[in-house]
Amino acid sequence: MKILLVTEFFPTGRDLRFSGGVEARTYYVAKYLAKNHKVFILASLSPGTKSREKISNIDVLRVGPKRVYTASVGHFASRLKYIKNAVEVGTSINADIVEGGNYISHFIAKSISLRKNIPAVAWYPDVWLGDWLKNAKFYGIFGEILERYNLFRGFDAYIAISKKTQTLLSKYTKKKIHLIYCGVDHQEFSKNKKKSQNPTILCISRLISYKNIKTLVLAFAHLSNSYPSAILQIVGEGPDEKNLKNLVDNLKIKRKVKFFSNLPREQLISLIKSSYVFSLPSKVEGFGIVTIEAAAAGVPYVISNIQVHKEVTRMGMGGFLADPTSSIDFSNKLSKLLSNKQLYLRKSQQARQLSKIYDWSKIAVETEKIYKSLINKK
Image 1: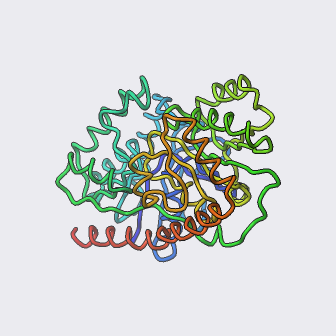
Image 2 (image 1 turned 60 degrees about the vertical axis):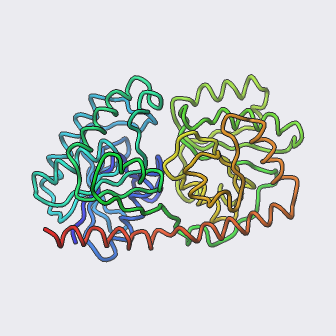
Image 3 (image 1 turned 180 degrees about the vertical axis):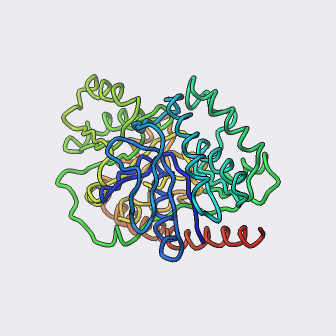
């Protein structure tokens, strides 16, 4: 098969700095599919990237104006140029099937499909219809309109990454919605690493309001009274970064909180392995790949008790689910893991077991079957 995957952003070179779960899933599925098929990635240009590149046997093509990834749906004009260029270039690629990975990519994939008369797949991390304004403020108007238009046009198949997304999607299409979770590259986490000297709580997330990192900062401020040597490490970028740093200053915990921009893959994995606990208090989540990656390293978690987290973690296997509106609940559950060695070891073992449910190689095979079935129908 000749497969074209459309994604707004894609990493470059050996660094593999993922901006989020959509990008990570696209890379790993493409990496495994490229072992037996010709795989093209169509993405946007960003500073430091090349217009054409070969990564893990994947042909990466980048188009449109150079733009920096931001955890918002802004940059309206540059997005329109990217869409126009992507449809033109995508139509010229000799592909048997095309897939889009978010609301922008869905529009591009469908447009390419219509021009080339090939099947189009919509991979769906989450459905935001009715919630765009709440999650993305003013720019959400554009997202709401485009997502509705994409669903109106329809796709040959839909892939949802959770039962929650599958259920929401079923309200807007009569097509079969395939459920395929995200995964872990277990080889990346096979070797153990010595824990950091001080008990470290790690958060990897976009710094945007719906990720709710403020709750974790407040929880850590409360926790640090009992664990003065504890460290909070936050990895990510986004519009909330300045506000979070100001909050850390006001709480007088600046010495105990470290902020990192998106890190190269190897460095990020090392940070995960050396951490004691992973934490993510997000109110909106498609799957939560980083939680499962932490679990693969045997790092227990404290994450929000939203529907998707309950589903993906099998109701808290390998960690704790906490109320995202309560910093005290997060603090108390983080404290349980730091204070009880036997509980910690038990949760660590459970976390590794949980991660084994999710594997990118198996997920690629499931995705491949869907592609083949669609191509055979043409």
